[in-house]
Image (tube, rainbow, N blue to C red; front, side, top):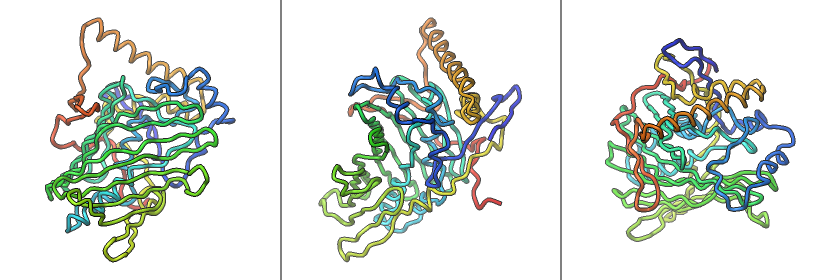
Length: 386
């Protein structure tokens, strides 16, 4: 979707459909994909940090990391957040939060990646009464902050994300550092969690979410341990697997066990009576996702992701790789000029919507500068298509 602006707004905004289970893995693939990918890493040593690694547009999808980060919150077919808030018991709310957390692990297209977000880039989108605002608060290291609020539901989310990708010969593993908080303010409950890592294998080709995720609610004493698993060496375990348990932090007594696949069905087993229930169906949540639309062109900031990268995205969508390459180079060079200008003035860049701090655990924390996120100029349609 392309929206033309005037002198008071970005000249162009390009919005593309969210990545979903419906499948768009062939949309941006280049020929001889695996060979081309491996050729990029000829001079990269195993174990190297790829944080500053730049991909040519041929290997980019037409959106930035910031947009993909935000999509995991606002691009949904079924509103799991409402279920988290509406459950009557603390245990049922916790189970719903676990299901919602699983829903934030989204399919990723093999062989291509989003643009590396530039410093100060923002992404502001609304879906119903949920308003979501993201900002790239650091470039080296890359740190993204998310603040989402829903006044009607009295819900708040504060996330801080710092991906650290490393190359290991035939694979890249991106550890996603940072804390995620979901606050159900009506119930006085805060749920703190982390994110799984993204594993990209070249031989054989494939990708998956892997690693351990812990979810904790201090007010109720409930915790969950989730383990994201991929293919085992002997093939005894399929890809996209997830298993875990919910327990009391005080007694460590297991209340529920869960297993399944994050891209299909996850079931929960009650240890007391053996009853099993489906707590997550990916098809309901991550299928039929709608492309956001611009409802207020004058409200779109020049720093908006879909505006910053619009010309690059146009080149990719039209497969005009020369245009995409030149426009991407222009975006990156403008950022270098801004850095040189700040350095010459002795200035330090300061985020607009977040305060950033380095915590004692060796990670980053982000604190929003406003209590409620305002409605956005970009909106996700709700309801069935006409």
